[in-house]
Structure formats: structure tokens, C-alpha cells
Length: 281
Ligand code: ATR
Image (cartoon, rainbow, N blue to C red; front, top):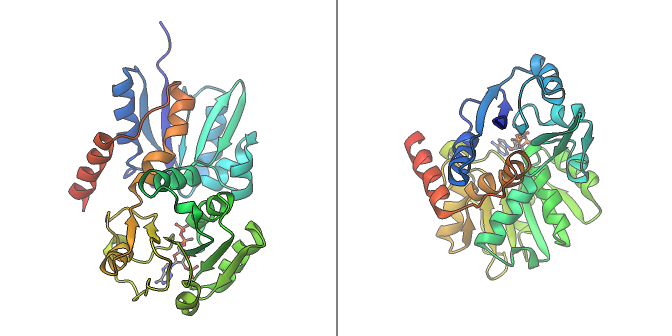
């Protein structure tokens, strides 16, 4: 009898991860006798965890990696693709022979979510990205790779924004929060990657009116589903896209690698997650 395929999500903490809900739904739909489980690992145990993954002793085909292990996953992998290498962080691992392979699907999830809900989002010349933490990197990389000519990173600590502008290319500029009004002129895309408004906390008043006609505002945070920044944009009649689709779509490539079937992000799955988020709110 074939061995049961197992995959994991590791992080610290990891117990609140919604990834098992997504992958176990797909396993059931595809009729695969596999499992996807939470493997919470403290930072001091992460090297051994990845080593056991590589040599097969853990019994996993691969898994997802979340905070704070994304850098370690990249560093400890035997091979990382170009996307993960430029980010210096991996969120998806799998084993090929005796080699631990790594990629980062956060940017893919971000882009496909927007493709799905706001097709043509990447036709704009100018994007504003708020925040310069770990989560902003994949967004900057993806928006750049989709060909958006001017990318403004706006951050409370401008030196962090400058660091990322330098890292990701010459068409990217860094600005302090006070410059937000100015850089918004002519932008067709605004992405919040900062923790502003996370958990429903207050956000400063942002004027989206200088953005172009049909501009899109999106948030990579999905708790709450309509974040304060999105609510602010909606009040100003600006189109918004929530961040839940990014979570769903970033999971697709990993599932395909481990279980051999490309899963679909359906309304049914999304609704399941929405209900769970409402329960947890
Ligand atoms: P992550 O890796 O999840 O992105 P992070 O590195 O802590 O987390 O980054 C959080 C982002 O939210 C940063 O851009 C941070 O700004 P600083 O670089 O100045 O710290 C931003 N942020 C958090 N709280 C903020 C606040 N109250 N006002 C403005 N920006 C805030």
C-alpha cells in the first residue's frame, strides 16, 4: 500500500494557522488519503526539523513555513528558486531526492488574488505600498515583476523603505508617512502591508482621491476581512480587494508539489474561511 502523504505548516507560534483548514479541504475534495498538520517548532529546533525533512525521517513530503522561520527555511534549503532567493525568505518547502527545495508563493498569492478580483490591476503605471516589513517584500517584488513602472514605498521608518528600494530596483522610491498624500497622485494601486489597522485598530485618515479613476486599494491583512484601511477607501468610493484570497492562492503551489494535484480556490473554500474568521473575531 502506498504511503500516506503528509505535509505541515511550521512557525512559532503556529497553532492559529488557517492553512490546515485549506489543505484538508482540498485533500477531501480530491479524495486523497493524506494529511496536513501544524508543526510548531521553536527557533532552536528549526535546523533539526528541516534536516529531518530532508532525510525523510519526519515522513513529510514538504510543507509551509510561516513567521519567524521563513528566513531559516531559505538559508537551510539546498536549493531556492529565484523568487525566494531575491526575498531571502521561503514559505514553501518540498523534498526532491535528498534535496530540500524552497520557493516563496506569497507574491504569487498576492497577484492571483488581484487577477481574480480586479483583473487589469497591473496596468497602472504607479503603485503605493505602505509598510517596509517582511510582508512587504513579496508585494514589492511582485508588483515590480508585473511591470508597474513607479513603485513608492511609504513607511514610518523611512530608512527601512530605503533599504527595500535599493534592494528591489531603480524604479522604486522610499518616502516617509508624511509624503503619502503626495505620492498618491496618479497611483492606480495602493497596498497596505503594514500592521496599521491590524486587529481593527485605528488608522490615520488617508485621502485616496488623488488616485486614478478605477484605482484599487488592497490589504494583505485579512483579520478583519474589511480592514480599517479598506473601510476608509470604500467610504471614498474606491474599489477594494481583501487579503483573504492571497492566503488561499499562496497555498496552491505547495499542495500541488506535495500531493500531485492542482487544487482550486473556490467560493465554497473562501466561504468556509470567512465563517471561521467571523467565529474567531
Ligand atoms: P511584517 O514582517 O509582518 O511586515 P514588521 O517587520 O513588524 O512585520 O513590519 C510591520 C510594518 O508595519 C512596518 O512597516 C512598520 O513600520 P516601521 O518599519 O516604522 O516599524 C509598520 N507599522 C507598524 N505599526 C505602525 C504604526 N503604528 N504606524 C505606522 N506604521 C506602523
